[in-house]
Length: 388
DNA sequence: GATCCACGGGAATACACGGATG
DNA sequence: CATCCGTGTATTCCCGTGGATC
Image (tube, rainbow, N blue to C red; front, side, top):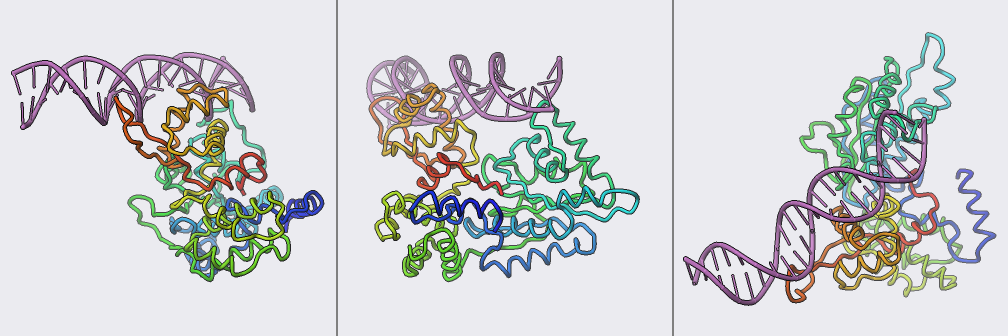
């Protein structure tokens, strides 16, 4: 448990009398340092990464698994651990990089391509993991950052393994693009593609992460619930039911648990009653998209989504919705409409055709495809956004 | 002054439907 | 009867603008 966590616990122990002790433990966007039940997968990842222990670069690796299987959780935990072990920590660098005998250093860089769409943002993300100086957020060209990266890695003893997570989602940095951007430093960098599928024309090694089995997911949810909720706030039967409902998808299970706890807490209850579970599950759409995708959007888009979630878009044409949302913000109807189309295109919203309303083209409506209760909570009281 | 990025607005294009045309 | 056309909407696309940062 790190300091932030300790403080958070104290704070909520004093602040509220609710059943949620620490929201982060229930959040689907926060990963635990020790993923539960993924031991074999970790082993297989380590097998693939084996060369690093001899000071070589590993081959390109793909980690693939269905949504909610914990691919992100595994890779973030793994990279954090390896980074500590193999001198990737920034402070260690500052002290060992001196004189002629340089100890080999391998950095383990995790890049979330949801938040790293542009070349500039990508270089910035990699670079700031590799150096202790702060990397400019603007005012400097993309070429400049690329040069800095090249300089940084321009020694035989320095190399990096870069994980590109969510490379196969719409509107994220693709794996191919990331490779292209890393081309100038290709000799010092290896990549790990993390996603639902392998990158196109894949020829590297692949580690498959199976969906959680029922009892594994029960363990995951139980551990989270015990850590995040007050003692005696839930019973094991309901967690088992929840795991059955989530069907191997940890994101969905956690999202529902989070929503459930939220509702119970707002109602001042001291237990997670079945009613709350029902509502909590109902707030997670079937075939849900990860809430992190909605949270990674820009400020304006997040606000538009929040407005939309708040007014339950039940079957209203997109034009009407846009007008409503626009009224509650500083945007024009036209702009909101365009944003809604864009969000639907990204898969964050689902578009449905409505029956024709007379003349002209048939209108459609949009509805959230992400867990709404979690989204609302995290976006309006942003804590740790889960950037890890 | 340079650079990146998100906005915003509107122009261009696609589609649905009914009625006219060959 | 098949196709074309006009009108009214819905949807997509493009590009200039401004804030923030260095």
